[in-house]
Length: 274
Image (tube, rainbow, N blue to C red; front, side, top):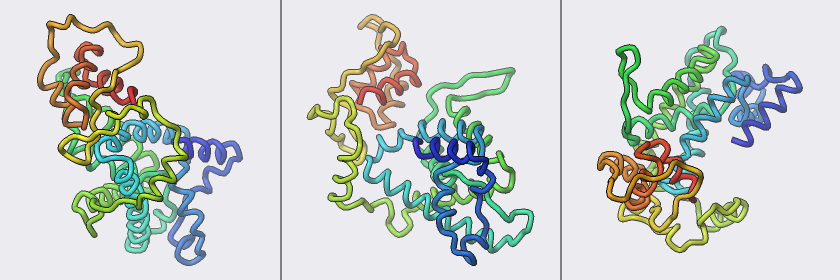
């Protein structure tokens, strides 16, 4: 998120945002690999940046589900696979109107929509003018806005990202079982700022699912609405929704009480209590 913000503003101030895109000739014939790498870290416009950062921030929930190590593998696989598919797509289409693709982490973002669709349950539903929506509608809306932001120039990267996420889901090359070596994970963990509660021995405990981190023993913090009386328990389906996202049952119940049974607010409480 920081890299996308810095690079987007840097090229925007210099008036070089239109040079962030890349073409098949740039990569294959001119061997300008730096354009391919840079395209992962910068958007071409401020609206794309806003929607992109919103989705990047939301999709951090998958890191809590599968762990930082495997999530890093997912990011690296999605970025590389989507870029390869984009190059292949440009070669197959061979259309002059689709000469230059837009830049941005489209592969990572749209690959994340695959587990978002399959693994994240709907927690709330509501109607507007007779049409039914859910709490996932806003995420899909942001994705559609980003997908069609530059029409065909952004449509192809988005589709390639979805394909990359599908390949990861199908465990191509057993990618879902891969992890970075411990010394690499240990090195990068030292570069990261420690999160709140990281010193607690229960913070690193895992539940029986193995890859899903447990949040048992963490006290939720923040200025949130006063809790319900202790005699009023949150709905079981709301607790089940948070548990399916990788949170401990007791921590989920406590967060729901503080958030007055608002699943979205409870999720933010749990994510912010690390």
